[in-house]
Picture 1 (cartoon, rainbow, N blue to C red):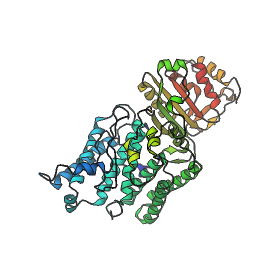
Picture 2 (tube, one colour):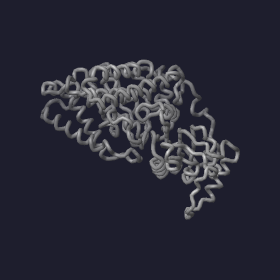
Picture 3 (cartoon, helix red, strand yellow):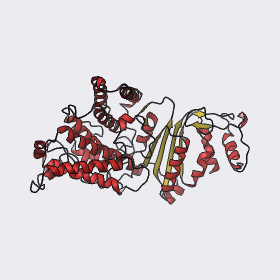
Picture 4 (cartoon, one colour):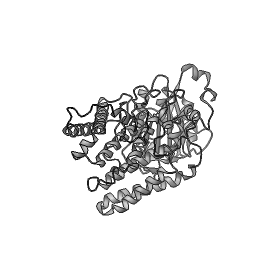
Length: 475
C-alpha cells in the first residue's frame, strides 16, 4: 500500500516500515531439511524479483564457496554495510513505479550477508554470532518482502514474507536474546508478522497465537518500558483485540480475494462492454482511503480498507491449487511445496497497485491522487475507494442533488471574491478531518471532477454516496 500517511504508532513501525526489495537470491533460514522453497519470479510483475525461501538455500549452500580466504571480519563488515544501506532506503517515498537503485543495493547486501552466514555458520558462532542476530536478519528480509508487496501488490511476495516470519518465530530465534534484544524490538517483530498473517487470512492458528504472544510479552516486560511507551503498546494491543473481534464473523467464510475454489474461471466471468474492451482498459491502480474518528483499525489499516484490499486481489495460488489439492489457508509451519512451487498463476492478471491512505488530510489525498493519475498507464483505470462520514448538506437526499452540484461547479468563477457561507448553499461532502474547520477538511464531489480526464471508478462507502453520482453526470 503505497503513499501511506504517517504511521499511527511510532513505536510499532520505528525503523523498518518503509523498506522494499528487488532481488531473486534470498537464501533459506538454515540448513534444516524441513524447510522447502521455490525460486519464483516468473509470472509476477515486470521488475519484481522473487527470492528463495528456506530449504533451497540449504541445497545450494552445500556447493558454496567453502572456507578458503574467508574471515569472520568480512561478515561483520558486510553486516555494517547492509545496515547502512537499509537505513538509506528506509525513508524513500513509496509512490512511483520505478524501483529505487538504493533499494536493490540494500537487498543485494542482505542476500550476500545471508549466504555468508549460511555457508560459515559454525565459524561465525565461534566468532560471537548469536541466534537472535540471525533471526533479526531473517526478520528484515521478511519485512523487505512485505514492503515490496506494498509497492507491487504481488501476493506471492506476501507469502514469502510469511515464510520467513514464521521460521523466525517457530525456531525461537529471539528467545535466547537476553538483554541484547529489547522487548520493543521483539514486539515490533510480532506485530509486523501479525499484519502479514491477517492479510493472508491465517486466522485459525497463526493470528491468535501472535495476538496472545504480544499480550504476554507486553505484560512480562512492563517494568522495562517507560510509562509513555508502555501506554503506546497497550493501545496497540487494544487495537488488535478490537480488530480481531470485528473480523471474527468472517473467519469461516469464503476468502474475499478471487478464488478458483469459489468463483468462476477467468474466461467465464462477465465480459466488459465492447467500448471498454476496444480500448484495452485494465484496473491498474487503486487508492483506498478511510477516515472515521473511532474506526476499527490495526496500525494504519482500517477494517474497511482491509476488506476492500483483499477484494482487489487474486488468491496467490490460482489453478495450481486445484490441480495439486492444496488449501490456500493451510497454516503449517512447514513451508508446503504446493504453497511455494507455483504461487503465481500466469493465467491471472496482475493485481492493481494499491495506495492505502489512513486518515489523510484533504490536501494529502488530492496530492496522492494527482500523482497516481499522472503515473497511470495509458490503458489504466484508477479505482478510488472513500470511506468516511458524510455531511448531507441542505439539499438532502433528493433526485436533483447531482444536477445541482454540476450546475454549481459549471458556474464557479475563480475570480469572484464572494464566498457562499449560507446554509442554503451547503453541498454534501465527506469529512477528512475534524468538523470544526468547515470546508478545508471536506471532500466535495466537485473536487474529483478534474481527475475524470482519466478512466475513473468510484466506490463511496458513506451515507451520502448518492451525491458523488454528480461526478459521472459532469463527465
